Amino acid sequence: MMERSLICINTCCQRLAFVKAFVPDFLAFCQENPAFDFVLALDGNDHDYLDFCSKYGIAILYSEAREGVGLSKNRVLQQFPDYQHYFFFDDDVELVDGRYFSTQIEIAKARGIGHFSLHKTERLINQGPAINEGEHLILQAEYGGAPVNYFSKKSLDKVGGWHTEFAKYRRWGHTEHSYRYVNQGLKTYAFHLVETLLPCFVFYDPPSSVVIPGAVVTKQHVAVAEQELMNQKLSYFPITTIAAFTFQAADAKKLQQLIDQHLTKDQLFPFVDGPERKQLLSLRLLSQSNAKELSIFKKLQMVIQSLVIAPFYMTKDKISVIKKIVFNQW
Image (cartoon, rainbow, N blue to C red; front, side, top):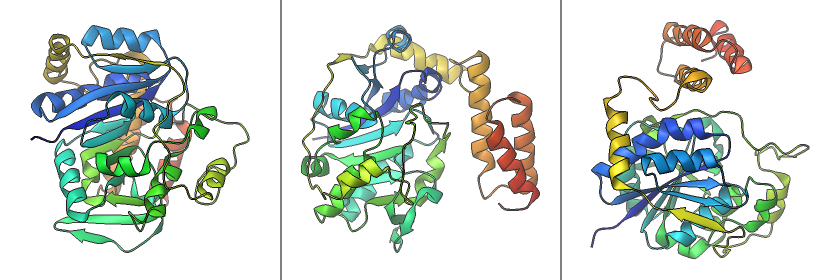
């Protein structure tokens, strides 16, 4: 029997430009790979999102209240409990190479590890020894990020879902969830990252859409409120939801029209225009300019292009990039 995987992009209100820009590549991948299905998980209820998904037949699960990405993932697991593999993505991650999915599953099975993350390596804190798995290098660390996450069904059955405590903050919780694997003895380190799979994505890293005034974080970049819960060393928390949610199924005919339109366009982000398009292009150039393998000349060229495309967007980041180039800190 064919194992099935669910790809989910988690998003929230006021980030529709990212959805329009990045969802089509994931949908095109799923169309070519029948073992994979796709759902967009909207934390909240926004007519613009629903209109876009209805127009193009995109499967969407949305809630009556915003409760953060953890509860958004719980809704997905409640609605779709029967997949063998789950991939969760932040909405600001661009898919470049679909070979990531099968490779990640193969590595997880080979190492007996049911949970992997993927993000820029500088977000790893307190790294342990790296692991060689064939041609792939697995990094492990005590702390990391969560823009891309893989989970096996078997592992989620053991550790459960994301804690409802974080619904009141509308963010956080991924570190506590990852540490349940350690608390159960399923992993030595909470975070495992296949470094050789990083080129499969572009990470945009825009400012968070949820800002909590006065929030205090530890030196490991974990919110104090989350660390206090982590100190309890939970090994399991049931997959629980709070707000009511609705699922709107995909429409295959409309999806085909979206994929065809996406693949035949000779430009990035054909469904995004105006200032939002400029912002995305600027973020993309900045993200690429941080790649270590690029020459200083190429990086400087990218920064200049970014300034021309969107001169008033992400100004502080652009200044930081230019300073790094000037002082040769790449």
